[in-house]
Length: 465
Ligand SMILES: *Cc1c(COP(=O)(O)O)cnc(C)c1O
Image (cartoon, rainbow, N blue to C red):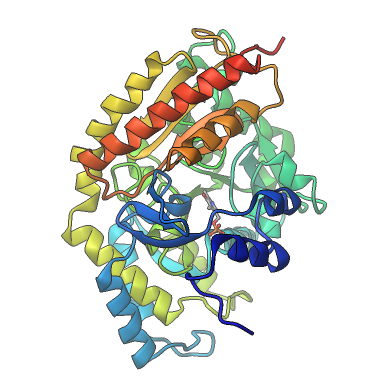
């Protein structure tokens, strides 16, 4: 076979991609007709495609490349580790330095008594671990009837059977008989489209109290845990009203259930603190981490577990683990990523420089005729597209039509913004500079202008009735 390299013509790469590569979360027939955009290189916040176009990455890959692309130090750390010890397991009474050092470093960074790490290969795997951890924990506490896990509609916790079950994505549940038993969902704190006439504060309290209602409906003695993202990411960067998390914390404390904060996106600086739990004053028993842990340079995830839960689990053999739990190369990469984050003050950069600068430009989009609201926490932002300026309403068209058109205009203008239904989302690399934010926002604004013209011309600026 002829070697397949960057030097092949784009059309040839696209044809091979369509012939052999099944893309995740994609209608592959549709993509095959149009051809995938082939990304060949990246540096800092910039991607380059096979046509030589330079694209500014407003999504940090999939919310993960927090320190930016192509850091030489990470390449060095990976090469060094591969030469020294490319793999060894941690199942059978053995350990290795990268896993030890990374677990210790994470324990140092994590708040409170979150001092213990169970490693996985991804966020989905870590959430599968959490299901088993939470249920096994209660069995060891001699309350084996506590097996139900409460999660939220439109939450995202990954794509494995467990992760997708915890998630509240109807389109995922419809494929493959999900959720698995013992997982139930409550409504999300999405004030903009679901808050009706309530104030955000009252609505936040009401949606938090849905947790208490559900606990009482199931029977408090049967509930093992509640899992949620501090800010829903894949659900559309939905920032809960300020009243929401304190009320959730009160309810979790009152009924003594475990709180699992899925920090896969919000962890490692995204919200302007090391963890989103710090931004929202949440005290979880378990945190899910992945993505920014390695800035996406290697697949690695994990569960950070508090002292009491870890001590209970430690009393018995936990019949669970992954071949690549604590993989030494992935761990060495994550350690180097965390070293860079600390030495370069990346979290401080988000808080003191990038967030304030981006906030000014992002919230200015609130005046755009196509924009209904803007939110931004740290470097995690969203805006609602609206068919009618000044009203909190859905489009008459199928949900996601306006969002898809807007995303296509972004793509054409060489800026990556994602859409979730009719919300647009940004989560750029945390190291983005003010000058780069200007380029990102100039292109995003142009894309919104073009989308507005197109939606108007196609008669799509109609609200649902
Ligand atoms: C991405 C994500 C996951 C899943 O992580 P994978 O590494 O894709 O398995 C889980 N939870 C949240 C909040 C995520 O954003």
